[in-house]
Length: 161
Image 1 (tube, rainbow, N blue to C red):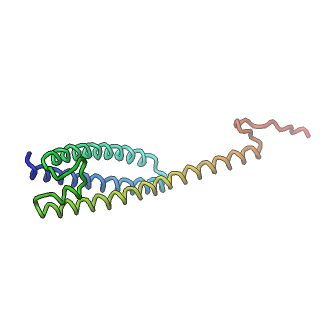
Image 2: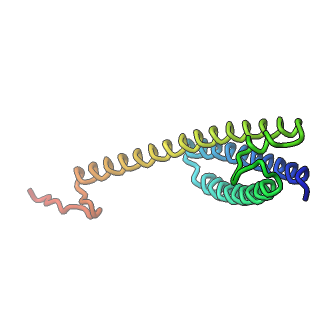
Image 3: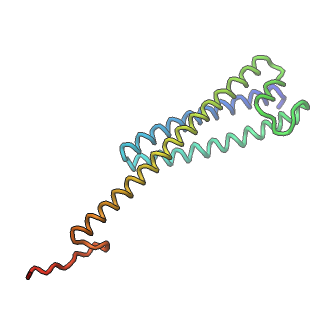
C-alpha cells in the first residue's frame, strides 16, 4: 500500500472505531435504564453486547496501530507512535488533514461521553448494592426482633406462662 491508501485505510478504521464507540454509548444508556427498572435479564444481555463491542474496539485499535506503524515507516517526518494530529499535519492531502482532525475531535468527544455514562452507571450500580444491603440488614433486624434468629430458626416461646 502507498501512503495515500494507508491514510485512507486509517480513516476507515477510525470511522469504524467511532461507530463502535457510539454503539457502546447507546448500550450504556440502555444499561442505565435497565438498572433503574431492575431488569436483570436485559442487563445480562447488555453486558454480553458490551463485551463484544470492547473486543471489536480492541481489534480496531490493533489495526490502527499496525497502519500507523506503516505510515510512520513511509513518512520520515513522523516520530514513533505519532498522534492523529501529527499524521494530519503531515498528510499531503489538505482534505484528508481536515478529515483526520474532524474524526479525532469526534473520537475524543464520544470517549468523554462514554466515560461519563460508564461512571454514571457504576455509581448507580453502587447505590443499588448499598440499598439492597440496607434492605437486607433491616429485614434481618426485623426478623430477629420478631422471634427469628439470624439462622432463620424460630425461637421457642413458652405459651404456658
